[in-house]
Image (cartoon, rainbow, N blue to C red; front, side, top):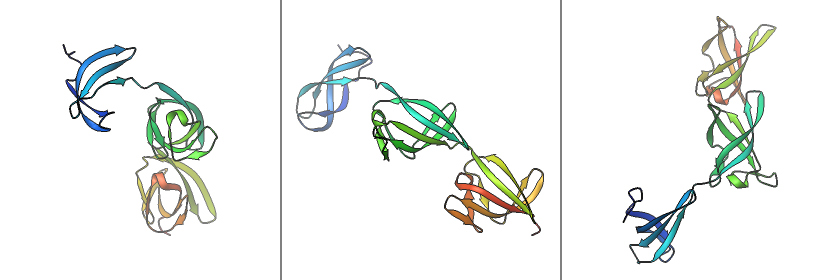
Length: 198
């Protein structure tokens, strides 16, 4: 008799055929938190057991950077998960981007299994804090604004800062300064402003 929760057929890798094929589920047995399925390959007729277990949770030591501040955190992930530089994840209702992962020998890698990661670094990506320098003759004043990371800033355009209009003279990214073009807030390290009449 087939259990209502178990499928009549499933796709699995057959150890005899060495490929994915449809299998008929003959019996299901609960084992701890998982299940064992006795299955028969519909291609070759080979009978074998599939063991399905939920992944274990592991904690990864992480440094989370939000603007100039950083905090240490333990990020819980499944032990069978692969994490790569550039991956996004949610933690404390914020979105983070993995910027570096180190293996057990403290060597950086671009991608590792969760259980192979010794430490991880990530930056917040659901908001950007952009530094601003306002130049008016010999006087310069600095401030910051918080905005969405996909907000676009364009050289030559007018923006309001503290109730005053300013013209964007230049944008500084991590790779240098530009006096033309546009950049998204997530790419901008600093915006240089001047009075609009200049």
